[in-house]
Length: 504
Ligand code: AMP
Ligand code: ZN
Figure 1 (cartoon, rainbow, N blue to C red):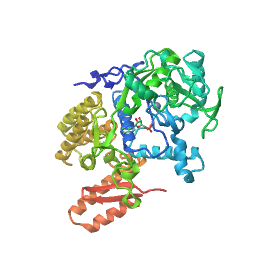
Figure 2 (cartoon, helix red, strand yellow; figure 1 turned 135 degrees about the vertical axis):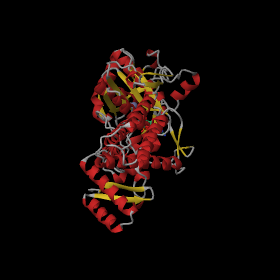
Figure 3 (tube, helix red, strand yellow; figure 1 turned 135 degrees about the horizontal axis):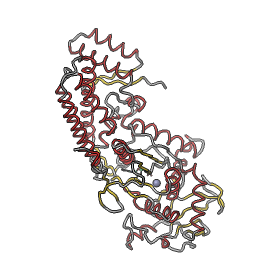
Figure 4 (cartoon, protein in one colour; figure 1 turned 45 degrees about the horizontal axis):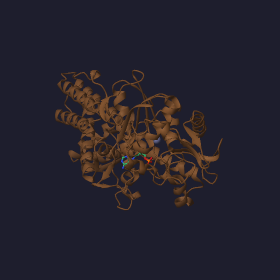
């Protein structure tokens, strides 16, 4: 089948259906995905949601769309009791500073630290860089202007404690989450900051007056800070315009965060905000909710740092594969067994890559390319699965099937087949983000096909052959040669991998 005829279908929380993504401007995807609050190291559950966004970008690019992808960093205004639309509690950033105070000079340092660790983990898991990663604190002026506009148009009002969005002014409130029943209404007002001036208990804060807040800005209403919901609407509009194609996040964001975003954004512009709302189901670990107290709470460094540094030494590529091996919309249970299976898959892809590279450099005969035809059809299936609501289990199965075919053909394949095999592996990497050569950082994992990557893989293949032939002297010499190129070689029962030596 020619996939150019197949629409890119995703589940839309707004309609409750899997439907084709209808672009505002043909060929151009405007996509906003909610990023984390940088008060701690993001955990692998957060990354499940970020990976969904990454796969949307990769799939859209694979069908030739020009993608403008924005994902933010929340560094103010996200409070601890955020399941209520008008959230209460403490600012998560301030609370973190209280418990970690001695490590950081101030709350901005804390934000910088966790933003840096987010980006480093982002690269380790080979997530695509967004067009821009805006920080809420760098867009305060735009947020104040948006709130002023809402007040001027009569859908927001001032009280002693803040500026509130008037929910009754927006009859479609509840359309995303279906949160219109008495029970859910009760939940949405639970924990609300006691404010006698509120006109309706459902109204939520756009701006909180608080001259005592750790992060505060001067506004037409005095010192204070923005509400969490207005931040994303404003950052999305700043970089993508008033209307976007897809807005994504984890399932907990449907209500209240995204519900409130729609109300604000559509009241500001009078136009529909996002056409498609995509939500990722929460990740569970070994069948349970991830929690620090249960000891099943993992960050990327917890899993991928070397054992000598307190980690588990897991290959980040295998971790990525494990995290995408369940479809985003189904409950997903992360287990160490899945991780082991993912490691085997990654090994298989790497071995297929080594075989194809060797054949590419060794075979002079152009020859037949029946392998290429089969791989073409498998890539087509892989893309078809991704276009079908990001069906990652089916897409991964096609990738592995292709790797098996390459392995079965062996390194005596024709030059034409070797090129087809390399192209298949590259396209698999492009679509699923599974780099085939190298564990480690993005800087390393991103460049398996650069000159160094090719030379190292070739030498590794020669060393493997020497070891098989029990010529250990030659194997040692080859190892020294490889290390002299500035890389470390790691041997394991499943084969050898390599990474560039750390420069820090
Ligand atoms: P937060 O830092 O809490 O704003 O979360 C950042 C993103 O991660 C949001 O899109 C959340 O919905 C998402 N998220 C949080 N926990 C999980 C989880 N266990 N599984 C999947 N996504 C999650
Ligand atoms: Zn958001």
